[in-house]
Amino acid sequence: MTPTPFAQRLTERSLTLGTRLCLGLDPRLDAYESRDALRQHTLAVLDGCAPYAACVKPQFAFYEALGLWGMQLLEDLCAAARSLDLPIILDGKRGDIGSTAAAYAQAWLMGDHAGDALTVNPFLGAETLTPFVEAAQANGGAVFVLVKTSNPGQADFQGEGVSERVAQVVARLGQDEVERSGSELSSVGAVVGATHPQELAQWRAAMPHALLLLPGLGAQGAKAADLAAAFLPDGTGAVVSASRGIQYAHALDVDAAGAAAKSFRDELNAALKL
Ligand SMILES: O=C(O)c1cc(=O)[nH]c(=O)n1[C@@H]1O[C@H](COP(=O)(O)O)[C@@H](O)[C@H]1O
Image (cartoon, rainbow, N blue to C red):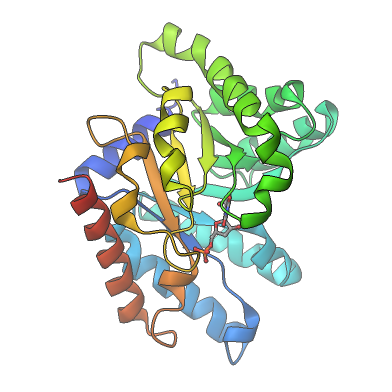
């Protein structure tokens, strides 16, 4: 049976629950009294925030920093997300020469530890994205290619026309698939920082069939009210992520995390007049 494409699953959940929020889960050991407290709280935040989230995005670094124990937590978190029907974007920002990219794709988009989608770094060239895209397309997954990152220093390299070039590649890589399937969104998505509100219309137009992942809400200063231009006219086609602004709301109180997620959800819906 052909798997349901990631973009379709995400869009269906987003419309059913009425949310464009991506729940980031980036647990830092220094915020907790013990590893057990970190584990318990992270899983509880997932549970408490799931009703407000279109998808979940754990960033690998925080789990890798905890060693094998952390990678087990990531695996358990993904299992819990699956049982909640939450599409999983693994934020690994992987990228390497083609043969190594194929191994990354095997690990994170196809293997036993795969998520539904993976963030990928295009710095090594368009051809190195192919193994990721093929793995995603074969498995009903997705990739989110870094196009314009949220951090101030992105301008050093990305400001030199690089983001525009990458956006062209994203649009091209998804084109055949949308022509073949007739669906509006391809499995080749893009990361565009929510911290660049004045550029969102430009990136939306440059990649009309790409699902956009917009990090930067909350802790990095982006405001939901400024983000409507990233979405398609029907209010789909993008998700906005917040990690610290949810997980660390009010001194690790799980109810406060849920309230923060709900409030981000409502602000995004208000921006889209939904
Ligand atoms: O790919 C990402 O998710 C990402 C891209 C980007 O341009 N900027 C960015 O902040 N991120 C990730 O999004 C999350 C942002 O976290 P908060 O600033 O705590 O909401 C982190 O996991 C970052 O690694």
